[in-house]
Length: 67
Image (tube, rainbow, N blue to C red; front, side, top):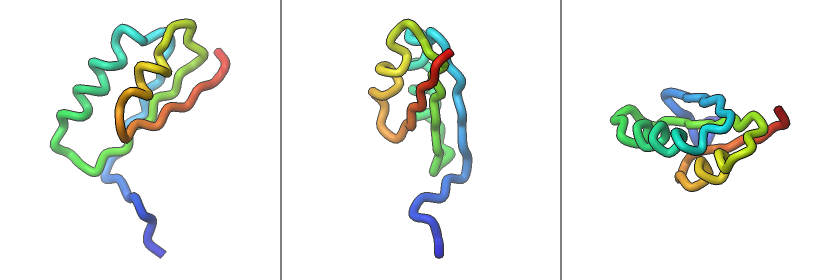
């Protein structure tokens, strides 16, 4: 059985209090011509809105955990 989504590349972004920079990082990934691309942001218990900023992007999976 073939999976529904089979990315050619996966990017995992560890983030902690990265609200100011995460959007720039994710926009840069969106501009890549390499596809399909799987992007996961792992928010390590940030005290800012890193997770909210990352969730604003389509096709980005956000995982949160306690620091």
